[in-house]
Picture 1 (cartoon, one colour):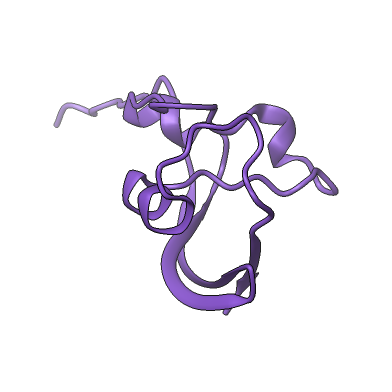
Picture 2 (spheres, rainbow, N blue to C red):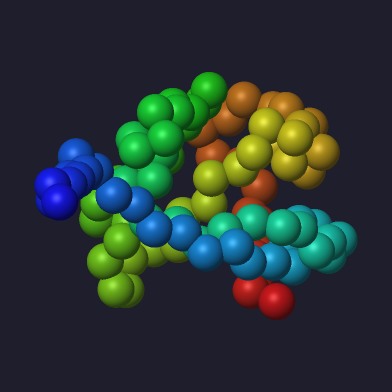
Length: 93
């Protein structure tokens, strides 16, 4: 019997979750995920605009960061390009 050794160059973690988001008092439940900063590089994806997560975003006490899907960006923010968007409150549900 030959032992097979497998190794990984990168790993990432995520868990599916749902959130209640509110922008200008309009709450909506959306599907999402809690992810670590290595997820996007492992998947080989880059943001169309802005940034994904940085290693410092994984630290306890770090400011919350949200990465929006293209669809959610269009629906909630009208696909506006801005360095800062309107405040978005998100609560895990």
